[in-house]
Length: 233
Image (tube, rainbow, N blue to C red; front, side):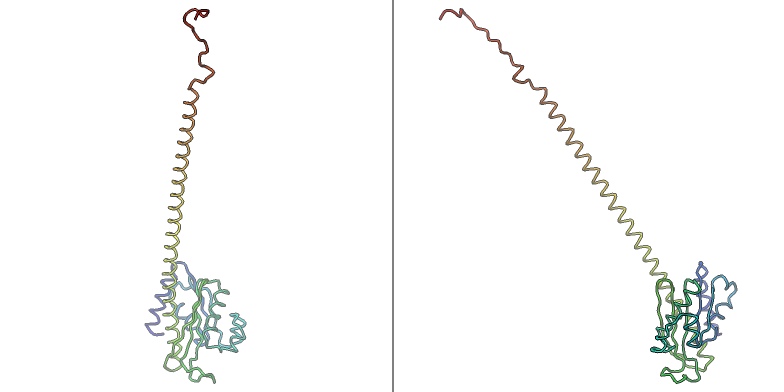
C-alpha cells in the first residue's frame, strides 16, 4: 500500500480513537482495506469485524444484501454498496461501516461496467451513502486505488456528519435556551398578573370598608324640639 493511502488510514483512525468503531465489507479488494487499517497498532480497539464477500451468495448470506437488488442492479452498484455497508454495520454493531464493490480487472467479467470502476458505501446508524469513481491501472493498482478512495470518502463523510451533528447540537441548545427564556417570560407575566389582581382585590376591600363607616339613615336623630307654646298660635 502506498504512503498516501497509509496516511489516509491514519487520518481515519485518529477520528475513531475518540471511542468509535468501524467494520469493513470488501468485494474486490481481498481484505486490503481491513489490512491497511489493522496495520496501525491498537487496531483491535476500533476495528470490530470485517468481511470479504466476493460472490453474490456471500453478500446475501453474510451481509443480508437483497438478492433482487443484485439481479437488477448488479454487484457493482450504489444500492449493493450501501446494503453491504449496512449489513456489516448491523452484524458488527459498529459506529461506521465501509464497503467496496468494484471491478479490479483485468477483465470486467462480462458486465457493462469498465475495469477500474468501483462503488464505496459508507453507513452509520443514521445515514448511508455510496460514491463511485474510475481508477485506471492494472489489477493491483486498481485494488490499491479502491482502498485509497474508500478511505478518503469515509473521512469526508465522517467529517461532514460530525459537523452536522455539532450544528444540530448547537441548534438544540439554542432551542432549549429559547424555550427556557419564553418560560421565564411567561412566569414573569403570570406573576405580574397575580400582583395586579392582588392589588385590585386589596383596593376593593378597602373601598367596601370605607363605605361601612358612613352613618345610615337608621342612626339619624328623630327627636324634634318645638319652640313656644304648642297650644297657642
